[in-house]
Length: 322
Image 1 (tube, rainbow, N blue to C red):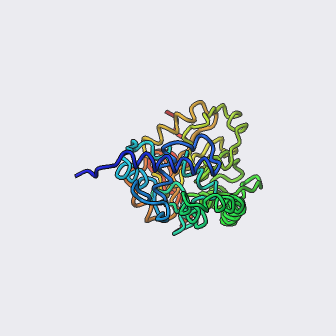
Image 2: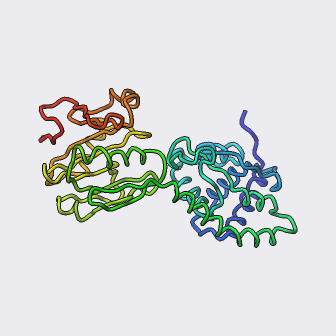
Image 3: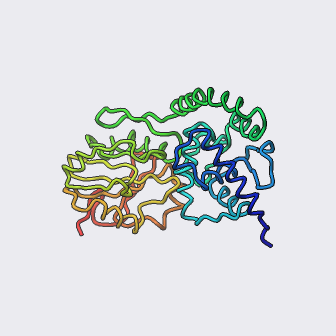
């Protein structure tokens, strides 16, 4: 039996959450029902609850959306999950109001297991909402939040993964997830199998575009839309005139037939021949995806970096003409 929701109490609680977001100076894009509900779910506050009873559960995006529906009668389509993450949760993180993955800091933020928790001083502030001392607590919080944001940013920077490209340029990747494997691709795969190659693109778990040489792609007669679904690493093997597209498999799948067609379309018109490579950290991970891997592609396993597995075809590590 569905839970009966007191609409007036629910709307009042949403309105109060919106008032808080406005007072904290969030941009207009975050002053909406979605963001208010997200805040309430992070505090586990139901329509009948008082603000002083706010708590700090570990909660993921999908459970947040379930909270919206069960306790406030606000149902969002499953495909809006990324909107909640990118247009609300991300901004809450930037403001230092919530902490991502406090149970496992190296977990990538786009992991399906990602969870979030209200930061301690923010929780104390929210418990004071509606009380006589609210304004003084608010001033104190706003005075310290900038320091907290700098602290969290510094801690995250210290955990970033340093990567040195073949041209000597140094970049850094956000911690955890596929970025650990991406570093191994650049450090181990590239010197062995694309010596003297030019790294054109490196993805990042958080920012997507960690490094991108658009001029190099233009010289190869390739035009990439900003939101094109790029592989994790793109290397121009100049000596062989190959463009090597590498997918790092941790949370996402390998170069299967569908992905191969997508990449072929994305890099259509390339003056260099296309080589498709799927990279795994270990054999165990590869075995989970073995029946998905496309023919006429290569597989590289980081734990045995000097070897490649060739999936059929008359060539070994080379492009195929259609």
